[in-house]
Image (cartoon, rainbow, N blue to C red; front, side, top):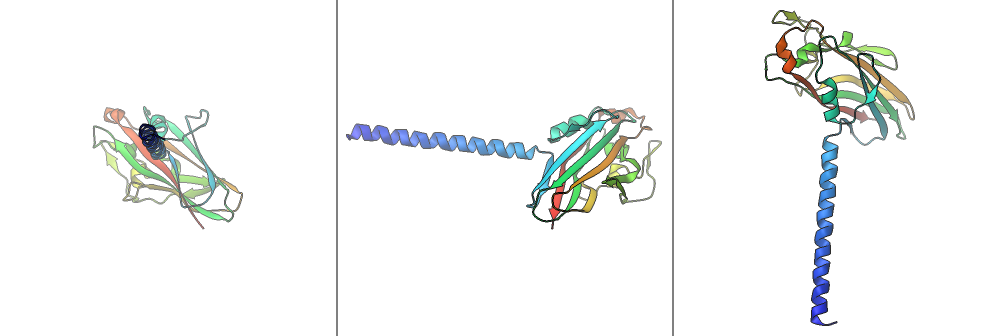
Length: 214
């Protein structure tokens, strides 16, 4: 092989490596982006199938898979709107698991910052059912809150969140091998909400965390 042919071969090899590296980087970048936008986020290394379904005002259920879909679902809400949620978990592991479900990073996005959207959205009756067994959520405070003439529900989201802006929907649900659990609850926009300042606001929930332990 002469020097010219060898040079061409080396150049082609280097170009191939560069193309492969660029393609690999793009693939990983796209993968990371798609994962960031996922709404249902399992935590810890257990095999499970998790489905998060929603419906509005008694309509048909649909499946939420991204944060953007969840934001769009809650956007343009009107006082009295009712949102139903079902979290379905099937244990595909080789042992029983204990599951805890959280709404992660629950925030109010409102240019009128004093009008916190988390005060006018509440979990109906503070109830979460697991396979039709009802559980009541603990409150941060039992003292009623009134703002601009409106007294909010004690189960408003702002009275359920922790210091990390998370809400524990249910904790320590035992799921035997190959079993399925259905976790159901409803959120309503307070029918007594009349201030126009809330119309510019958006309720945001970044993700649904499903934490699994042995």
